[in-house]
Image 1 (cartoon, one colour):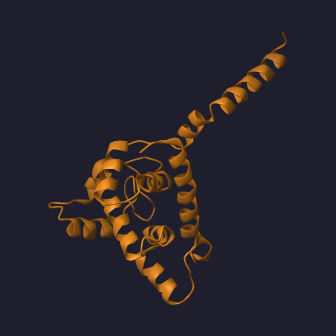
Image 2 (image 1 turned 180 degrees about the horizontal axis):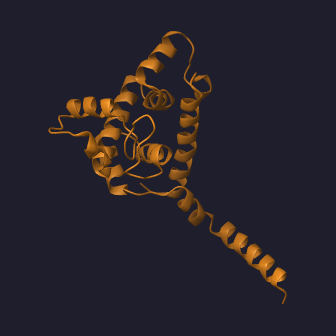
Length: 180
C-alpha cells in the first residue's frame, strides 16, 4: 500500500472517528475545569453555572494566572478596582489583588459580580454581559442615550459586542456538552 493511500485512509478514518465522537472533540474545544467551584458559587449567587463557565471560557480559557493588557486578572478577568469593591461588598476580609489568581476566589468574586449585574439589568443576560465586559456605567449610558436596546447588535463597543456573542455561543455548547 502506498504512503499516500495510507495517509488518505488515516485522514478519512480520523474524520469519521471525529464525526462519530463530536462530543469528545467539542469538550476539547469547550473544556470545563473548576466545575465544583463554578457550580457552588453559581448556586450561592443564583447565576446559571453554564453562564459562569462560558464567561470563564471567553475571558481566560480556564487559565487562572492570566493577566490582560488592561490589568484584568484570573479566570474571570476581574479588574483590580472591581475586585476590591466586590470583596468589600461581599465582606471578604484581608483581600489582596494577588489572590485573584486563586481559581476558587476568582470564580466566587466574578460570579458575585455577574449576579449583581444581572440584578441591576433586570436579569437581561445581554446587558449584564455587556456591563461585565464594557462597564456597567457605559451600558447604563448607552441605554439612557438610546444608543442600545437589549440585544448585542446595538452594543457600541466592537470588543464588547464580540465578547457577548462569544459568551452566547459558548453557553449553547456548555449546555449541550455538560450536565451541571
